[in-house]
Length: 245
Ligand code: UDP
Image (tube, rainbow, N blue to C red):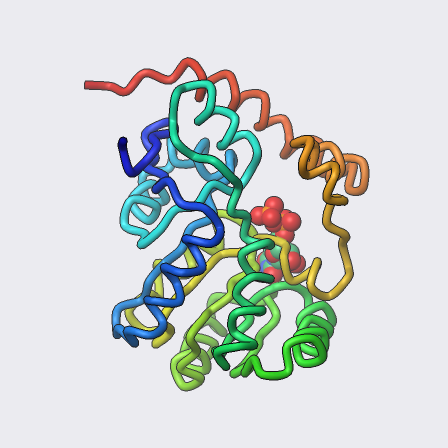
């Protein structure tokens, strides 16, 4: 059985959420100096990779690409792949905070608006008292400010750098500074800090189970409709995709 599933040229290791957490636990325990970049691969990232070679190189180099998005798992099923469950950035973040609370891991949180970042920190401190938040910074900074933020992260030396700048900015940002960040693991988590802070709500479990999270997001944030047009386009292209020889 293959260990990976190919979706439009992107290689997704066939890992469950439990396996992902175990892999990352191992990476943290090894205390490697090289940054381990986790990409939560959703249809938007897979589609962007078809045109954007720089992003494609970032994804190809990542330590792990997980199946974020029901569309990825569905396409895998139809095409005989082995992806069995979604590993979304948001679920992964909550699982890592739980595990981090047991193992006293440290996290640096980059991204989201200032008040959201501040509130997310309070929520984490309240619910995961053994987690060390070694720093945080909002996500609305200029290019000139980046070096200072990178230095702050480097001095914080976190186990996990959580980057909530939206995709694919987060992935590109992590890659740009990967040799300077001094973190064990870095993950782009989209709008997850908004969820931690309670600014936006996650779709109820039943909607997620029925693969309708996209509909819930559309109903609660109608301004996203344009971005969501990519989902049917992704489904058609991914189902018809032929690898170029
Ligand atoms: N964001 C940010 N800086 C920016 C643009 C966006 O910190 O310049 C944050 C935004 O506040 C939100 C997240 O990035 O918390 C993006 O959320 P979205 O739901 O759009 O991301 P997705 O999950 O769709 O990638």
